[in-house]
Image (spheres, one colour):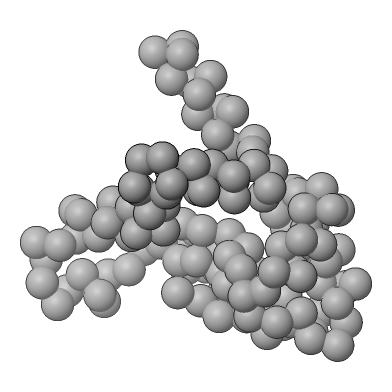
Length: 126
């Protein structure tokens, strides 16, 4: 059990660059499409619910579509909101469209969206 906790802690503390490398390894070496796997896992329990599953979405992804005119302000805000380093936050903003946060509650997602839009970014919730 302690090994799994250590693994989970290491996974949570990965940088954006390390997550991208992990995604590449999973795809190339194991044939696992990380985004597709996450969607399958999230949809798994709700799949038996039929049409009600779409209405009962409990986890959202905050997607940065574009940084807008105030790119520096958006980078600083992304750094603050995600806990990423400055370099990783800049890479995330430069790589738009990109996910800022995944698997967050509706309230948190809407708050993040409002903050980012206030800074000048174009944001979408999925």
